[in-house]
Each structure stands twice: as structure tokens, then as C-alpha cells.
Image (tube, rainbow, N blue to C red; front, top):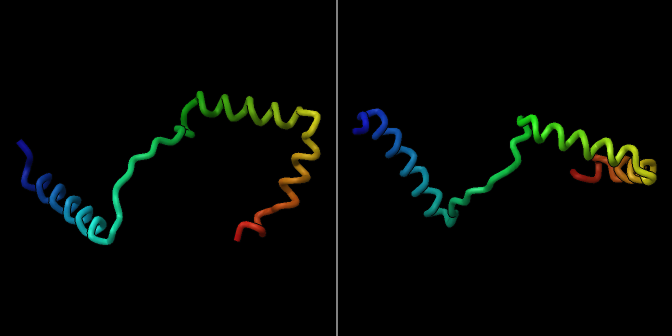
Length: 73
């Protein structure tokens, strides 16, 4: 059995979703890597080291610096 407070909260969420649908939006669910997990950290470190130690490391870094953050905005 749900409490009155839980029911109010559920109604608010449903009303919010209904408003968004009326605006032509639809809900989607996406799954992304858990960047807090030890497995993610280990794999990111492994890949970073592989890139840093590659024969093309200097060329790759030069490219990253050439495009810079200024080009994103």
C-alpha cells in the first residue's frame, strides 16, 4: 500500500511527464558506463597508457592540442 505522500509524489511525476509529452517529447532510457566503478577506472587507465606509449603519441597529442577547446564553442 502506498502512502499519501508517495501517491502525491507519483502524481507530480506523472503530471510532469504528461506536460513533456504534450510538448512533443518522449522518454528514453540510456545506459552509460559507471565512471565510479573500479573496472571503469582500470580500463581507462589501461587505454590511456596504451595511447601515451604508442608510436603515434606525439602526433595524437599535437592533434588534440591543435583542435583545442576553443573550437568547441
